[in-house]
Length: 95
Image 1 (cartoon, one colour):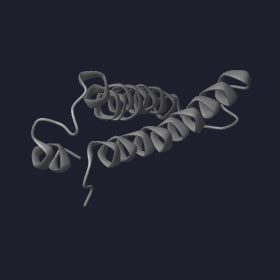
Image 2: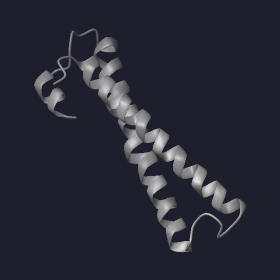
Image 3: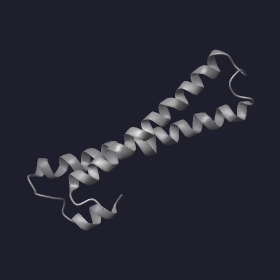
Image 4: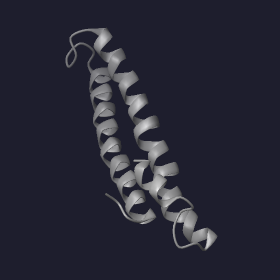
């Protein structure tokens, strides 16, 4: 279990990094399919599902955890000049 705000922020940043790589791989699949339609994916429904999954991964598992969870936990206490978050136990259980 994480003990400080920096540990929790690091966990959020790692989640964002791995989700960003997953979203990047999905975008590569989309680009390959657009280059030669029908060669990589059997049906158009699969392509639509990949587009939707890419959007959900990039927004909810990359952008929001990195900006709100990662940088919020790392920078907010430093900017405010505090030692830790206001409710450190609640912050620890937030992830």
